[in-house]
Image 1 (tube, one colour):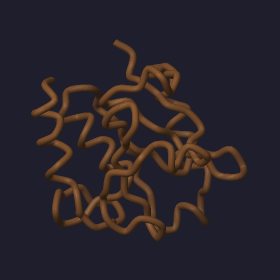
Image 2 (image 1 turned 180 degrees about the horizontal axis):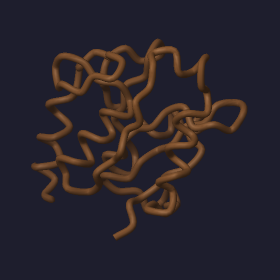
Image 3 (image 1 turned 180 degrees about the vertical axis):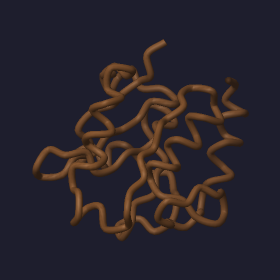
Length: 141
C-alpha cells in the first residue's frame, strides 16, 4: 500500500465523533471499530469484534482483554523503533486489562478516538501517549 493510499484511509476518519459500536466515517466510530476499519481497508487484518454494551467497563471490564487474548496468537509484539503503518498500540488499565487501541500511522504518530478523553478521531504523537501504551502489535503474516 502506498503512502498516498494510507493517507486517504486516514483522512476520511479525521474528525469523526466518538459513537459507541458505530463505524461510519464522518458520522461515528469507537476505538475498536476504528482500528478494525482502518486495518480492514488497508488489507492488513480482519478484526473480530465481540458484541458489547455501552456499560462494558462497569458490567464486564475484562471483555476486550479476553477478546484481545483470544486473538493474540495472530499478532506479534513490535519494538517502538520498528513501528510502521498498520501496527496497533494497546492501552491497558491499572488492572492490566486491555481498555483501548489505536492504529500507528508512522513511527511517531497514531490515530484514535477515545470516549470521554478524545471525542473525535484525531492524530496524536506517540510520544504524548507513550506512558499509557502497554505494547505495540503487528499482524503476523
